[in-house]
Image (cartoon, rainbow, N blue to C red; front, side, top):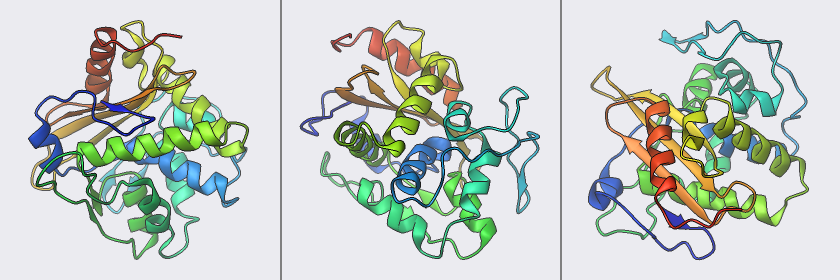
Length: 254
């Protein structure tokens, strides 16, 4: 858990592991990339993409688990973590663009929050398939929990600095909806207003999934970043744990 204003580490469990564990971030990358693309005018958040929940990319089964729905816009796609939507976003990326979007967030470098940190592994995509798999956090990128926390602190600062921009409005609304009734809804069960994103991915040498939740609280005016990483589990499990942590943490409620 990080203080957004100062970047100070407020609380941690197994900090050494959080500093040295590298894992595929799954869908936690979606809001970071969406924010950058909308901010630079490279993606219109009103664009709608249909999803049949049966996405396959280069042999990877990336079926969506959200309910059947009409084509999603950006806010809805973020709420329900639609892989088809973000695969369509990825297909519009230019060579080298994904790295240029992610580096300013702090995701791809050591944070200085712990000793002997590992540094993220990132391979710039060299094909349309690779663009999709990397943006979806499946291949080509592995980060530490501390790096993901730093990136979401960057996002929180951006949302606060540009609250009336299209990029801030759509990402803020999508993350708030996600943690309220969408794919990260388990995070709100503790009664604390939170916005955030889940992620589920598989390890390099194992088909066992690991789960993430990255969020900001309180949702209206965030003061803290919380990141939960579960070496074995799914994003929904990490969101549930985040909700329990926030319910017992001295976080100011709106």
